[in-house]
Image (cartoon, rainbow, N blue to C red):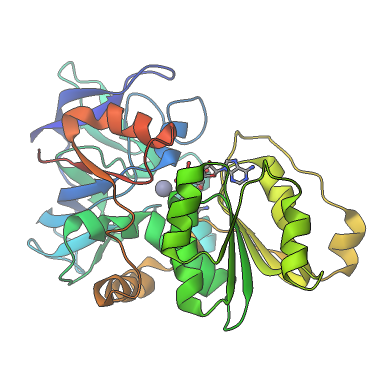
Length: 363
Ligand SMILES: NC(=O)c1ccc[n+]([C@@H]2O[C@H](COP(=O)([O-])OP(=O)(O)OC[C@H]3O[C@@H](n4cnc5c(N)ncnc54)[C@H](O)[C@@H]3O)[C@@H](O)[C@H]2O)c1
Ligand SMILES: [Zn+2]
Ligand SMILES: [Zn+2]
């Protein structure tokens, strides 16, 4: 099938929207017509050498849309179903998937390259992150889509492919923020904004957002932060301790994509507290941590990869939370872009001109 897609031709180049040919689906594949695609800062990391893309590659890892075609062996979806695309793949048969840890699936970390389309000259095009959603049609494996009957518009449903799900998983599943907790959030961008919303829903009484950009601090306050701190205004760790009788936060989330913020989130947490680092930096960047604190002070560092969710269990119930109004997707989306402006949308997200850009691949 002929279609348009935003393709990264080579590392370091700008993505270009090209006419390509979607490959024929196999027995376990589905073809999805995406209605909306959440643009994620992580998609911009795929522009640089690393494991996220193997150029030429269709960028993107989030989408919501409608199933258009299914392979002969597909049993869980039929044409016409509304689906959310799983933001990271889950093969269902590797060591980690078998252990109930699909967020560590081999397809995410072991360099699987999936070809989904061809250029006019026949060159195969891969899917960034094994997903590849900046396109008019998506060729995915059955396990890469989850049927979600919902009244949500695609522009909001697609947020379950990345931001909303990562935050709900982090707050409710990984950290288990509880009533009366004090929560610190380092970085009040897209992910941090969702975490602030989720922490409020979880019943946290103090939500401290640490963010250098003034307009984002203001936005965090509107989403539920009770305190906003500018890291340029002195020692934020001390200020979080001051707010908590000298103890530190019960839970700290790092969504700043900054190694210093990872360290600060650890230092800002009380003895026995929980630290959840979410931000991605360049591969190989490290952070120093005090050994005796690790050994003696009971803080747990809990990793978060797409909220560590089980997509089939979690995405339908997360959709119900968005439908109910308990969390507000409209407050997170700033602007929609047609597919032809995919590069512009990605640059706007990476340059922090907006919190969430949504691509409309059929426009
Ligand atoms: N682990 C996961 O499940 C997961 C899921 C989605 C995205 N991510 C990653 O999370 C990170 C954040 O994504 P995003 O879309 O929210 O990005 P974003 O750019 O919208 O937000 C990052 C925010 O951190 C702020 N910041 C920068 N340095 C800071 C510091 N030292 N202290 C406090 N704040 C600081 C920035 O001003 C910005 O507002 C990215 O690295 C992304 O790849 C992780
Ligand atoms: Zn797997
Ligand atoms: Zn993402």
